[in-house]
Structure formats: structure tokens, C-alpha cells
Image (cartoon, rainbow, N blue to C red; front, side, top):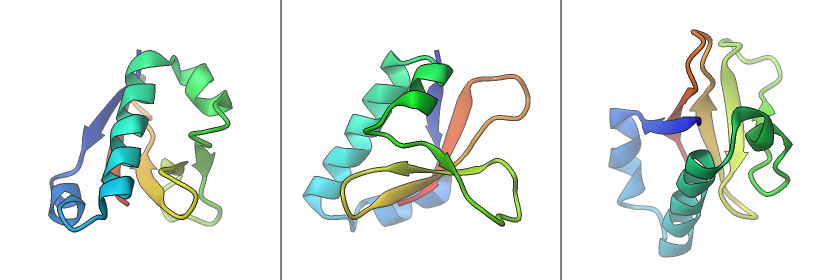
Length: 87
């Protein structure tokens, strides 16, 4: 099962997010705990997608809500640990 880890810098911005956005982050956390990597990639609600022209090819975004996206680093070491960097 994939896991969603959090960058230390993420928590600095998390506290200032509005309550519905924080709820969206918690919902995304649950999806990472419940779904396999192929299911995460196919999930229409999470909408895990690559970032075009990103400096780091591991860069992805996930949908937090209709207006917010999270920036994650996808694993490239064979693990299933995704790192949430920012919202």
C-alpha cells in the first residue's frame, strides 16, 4: 500500500490553511492508505498527475479540493512512499 509522508516545510503552511482545505488534505491521506498505486493513478477524485516541464521528473500534483492542489514527489526507488511538499 502506498503511504503519504509529509515534508517538514509542509506543516508550516498547513496551520494557515482554511478548514475545508485541511479536510481535503486529510481525505487525500485516507486515499493513500486505502488504495494501491495503480488505483491512486486512476482515481478521478485525487487526479494524481505529472507536472509538465518540472525540473524533477518525480513531481506530481493531487487534487485537494476544487480550488487547491497538493504538490507531491512520487517515489523512484521502488517504494510506495509519496512525499507531500506543499498545498
